[in-house]
Image 1 (tube, rainbow, N blue to C red):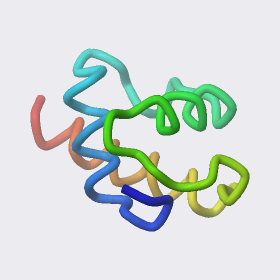
Image 2 (cartoon, rainbow, N blue to C red; image 1 turned 90 degrees about the vertical axis):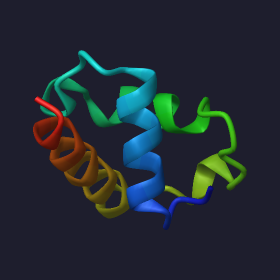
Image 3 (cartoon, rainbow, N blue to C red; image 1 turned 135 degrees about the horizontal axis):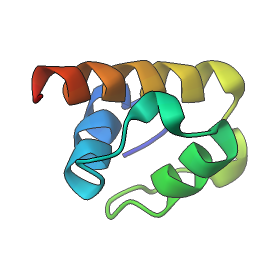
Image 4 (cartoon, helix red, strand yellow; image 1 turned 120 degrees about the vertical axis):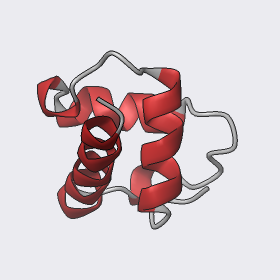
Length: 67
């Protein structure tokens, strides 16, 4: 996975942290969570606020769909 794989990252985050409300996660923590995912292979320094926000929103959709 890379920073552009928003949907795949969102699914992986939901599976790794099913009880966590994505809106409660700060971007610094989200960055760490993403880079620690199994299968994440992108440069940690290539993230930015827009990418983290897109990941957070995709994760939120996954979270709400499974409630």
